[in-house]
Amino acid sequence: MDDLKNKYLTAILQAGDEATLEDIRLQAVGKKGEVALKMRELGKMSPEERQVMGPKLNALKDEINSALAAKKVALEDAALDARLAEEWLDVTLPGRQRPQGTIHPISRVSEEIYAIFADLGFAVAEGPQIEDDFHNFDALNIAPNHPARQEHDTFYMHRAEGDERAPNVLRTHTSPVQIRSMIAQGAPIRIIAPGRVYRSDYDQTHTPMFHQVEGMAIDKDISMANLKWVLEEFYTAFFGTKVKTRFRASHFPFTEPSAEVDVQCKWENGTVTVGEGDDWLEILGSGMMHPKVLTAGGIDPKEWQGFAFGMGIDRLAMLKYGIPDLRAFFDSDLRWLRHYGFSALGTPTLAGGIHG
Ligand code: 2NL
Image (tube, rainbow, N blue to C red; front, side, top):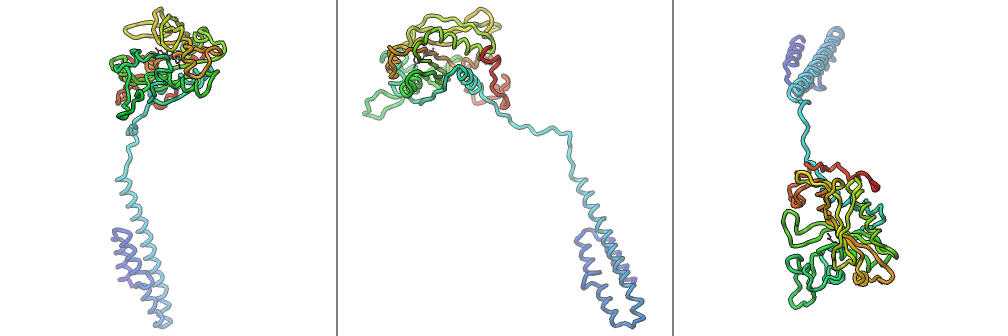
């Protein structure tokens, strides 16, 4: 009996893992283990012998069981200590950098423009970027021999061989959107038409694709005074400071009379600030809708009149955010945007609000 006890207590003490410990348990105190065998022998003993051996066997079983339990706890503690020694965490390490997206300045400025004109009662109209000759040129009173139609300015699409119709073009302005809106909606109408336009030109101030916003208001008694007020409200809200404008007589085929509009500005170390100083910066073309253009849009010029204007969104973005080279907008590497404070978390703001 003492042999049995020593054998198992030693084995338990030496067990290196829980699987070994379980084997020992089955061998010693399992249903078919050595202690159980000994217990079965009790039946063959005399009552006197049994009275001695019975309690001894029970005590042996208890002793082995408690040794097993103690060893199990010791093994679990050792395993935990090993894991704690191996798995550690340096909580002073910096977090992982995530690449941060940004809102493109053109998108942001577009949203700002939509919001300001929405407050002035203008809806946003959109149309195709591939236009036909009528909507891009004829309807706008641009004669067949006008220089704007020439190859160096306009991207022409190819017609199938034998198709004699005038070729389609990449729209050179968003005016055709306004023509389509006039035809679809009639007067009165108040819309802006923002979007991509295309001209064959490339240098520091020109890219072959750029963004334009045109606008128009047609009603019974619209005048250039309304145009001037709307534009001053717009620039004041857009630049977040009271902006004076100057109208200079000009010429466009689609307006009569026509005016180029300058905004008040200041030049300093090669950079320009709008809304201060006493220089002028040309920023927009405008005028009263030409009667022929109204007619092309299905609107009777004897009954209705309207103003129209057009300006470049890219240039507005450059002026507002001090970005010197237009080509940066179309570079695929946009890390430079962060320099101008554009981040994905930034939302468009209307600094100063509509009334400055
Ligand atoms: C410029 C000139 C302008 C318009 C655009 C327009 C549109 C229709 C009828 C009449 Cl449907 N006019 N648009 C008018 C005057 C000027 O843009 O230099 N833009 C940068």
